[in-house]
Image (cartoon, rainbow, N blue to C red; front, side, top):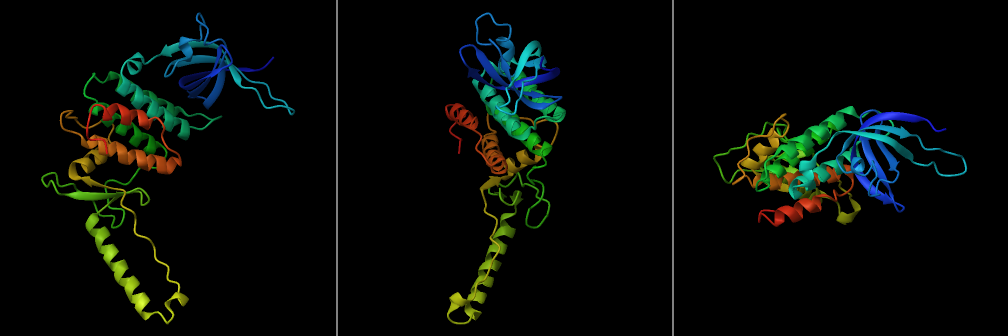
Length: 302
């Protein structure tokens, strides 16, 4: 007889197996990510059918898969599942569903297996609850809450971008909300925001230094190899309002949203997406759903 264990988990991914089974990837508080077979879950009258759906939270009894030296270990199997929470509001709104899948994909990249993952489990459920509670609207509030969730997952992983200070000078950045031309740079490789004036000054200094070194080099010039540290690449330029939004994402609650005018959330989500993909080392596939959904409702997608 194989051993069994109990766990509380939320379903993040499912795939068909054979004619009637499912493989479910579950984030559990006790054991992190696990993959288990829900036997017969695709049958019409299966008790595991609804319980194996996306974003369903279950109290699980799982039978541990067998392993042998001569073959690949078999997957664990769900023997019992008691649903303790669902998020039906997410599946009824395409924008909310896309944002939830986006967050789930980040969790699948960040969460570990075979060790407790209570913090990331609680954080995911918290942000799914916030998304579900949103009223049906134009969608910008969904983008804002998505950005809020992404920022918090980055913080939990120790990857928070620096948005309060300039990465070059370490000086505090205070957005001038009264100046429509005020801009700040964001560099993914440098890890956050950059004062454009400081960046431009450094660029000029490096250009001057490079010219001086070339002019003083012996002939032929290719005999001297001069190494220069590259300037941080500016990934995007953000206005004062967009930086203000970024700086508020570290707070427990999202800032007040004016759905009629806060199109800056689209830019904030885009830069956080690029930053997250850079650190994950892979694209966020669910982000295409965000693009297609909001492109159909807004002309501000970059």
